[in-house]
Image (cartoon, rainbow, N blue to C red; front, side):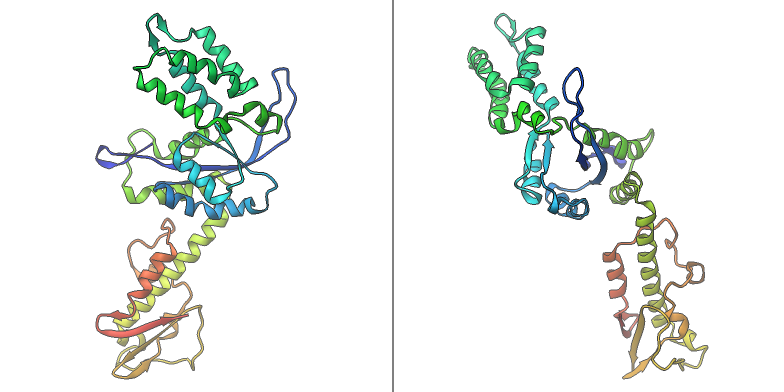
Length: 333
């Protein structure tokens, strides 16, 4: 959760993608590590998050992977996410999450106190991990049957029963899959909360996702790559605004008198602006065609090295050139 202004809180969704390494034998059983982990975080609804995460998943090669495993917490939106990107994935309910349901059932008070003692609960967790749900669910059903009036107990049992396929932990371990979602749980803390949940921090809603994008770039070791994209988009935005400024000040382009300079149709940058006024084409000066005019010359606030410009913002600014201050014009590639 991330704190917003005015005492509000908001949820951030995070995807962690990694490469599962072969198990390493140890006295307590095989140890499975996931390496080369990358992250994608956004504050948005589940449907939009699924669409936005497509690029990261394809970058990590999900389409060509021999096998894909998904460790989830059982939320419905997580199932929809897997259905969208890799329906054939091996789906596993995070073991710690399943253990929480066992704990809730065990600690429910019956006529003679808790349904299960602490020792019985430990044994039940061990049995679930090493023998699977078939060795656990029958005994749970028998105990819960003694509490017919407790709807919460019945709901907790139903939760586990409807996810039997995701509780096959002995099989998952034998196949070399991790059965815990530790890497995404730690991502919530190290990637999101360490930057956005500091002491005294309260974020404006519009600033959460831009900061998450930058934070992902840092944690994924892609800062240089992402910053080049940001600078390129900044240049496009500044160029579009520069064109609009010349549309509003045609006399300043030519140095007075209303006449405009021409360059024989050649352009020195990646964009050119053509305007029409009174039926005649007006070609902007060479300065108007600079690929990325220095922000200091333009003097528009908000254009700085810290501004992240999206293609949609650029398109919006470009669209403003079409009819600016009564001067008809168009911006063309």
